[in-house]
Image 1 (cartoon, rainbow, N blue to C red):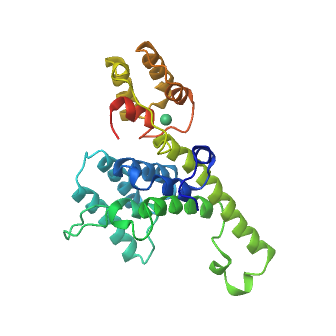
Image 2: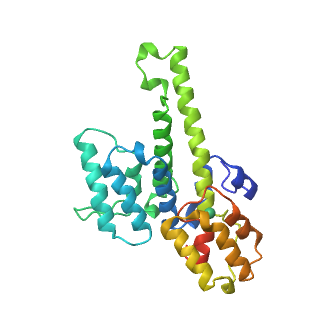
Image 3: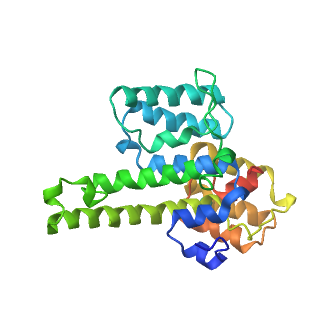
Length: 258
Ligand SMILES: [Zn+2]
């Protein structure tokens, strides 16, 4: 895999691993967590339990430091204990707890602690876990090895595996759209001129962020235009009518958060 994926390849990639690898250390913990949360939000109803869903909610608030690492740890521990008691593997939400402090005082590995395994490992695991939930819910089976031995050679079994792979790929494409909404390619720098951050544009961006009212982005484009903004990348992004999520790079730029 080429870590120096070009900007064009970045725009066209449907490979979550490749995009995360490109970001590596340049991505903030907050934005990475918001991306991982967005992946889980897409499969919210497929998560194992309300305890898993609570981890997603708390992780989202933790990303913006509205709750403590201890609160995230408590939510994570609840979900983990429940799954362990039922002898189940935890779902995609289990990877959202990086950096949390558990009730026993121990801290789960932080994103920067995971670099020896693979860059941004918990983020990737969350995305893959979420895509796997979609693929399984569509009736797919992850591999022939997951089936009873005497069924592995049948055409029906191969179709189950193909279904899994196709659905996983489709979900990965959508995840990559979300990832590109949150992150620009590391070599693509867009600077917001201070004068474009008017009372109007900041207030609009705050409403969009807090209430997730992305339908207001074209209005934000107009407010930025009124303030003298002539950056085509910013204006075009605001006028795009889909694939925005909390952490959207334009909204973050106006709110001066990274
Ligand atoms: Zn956006």
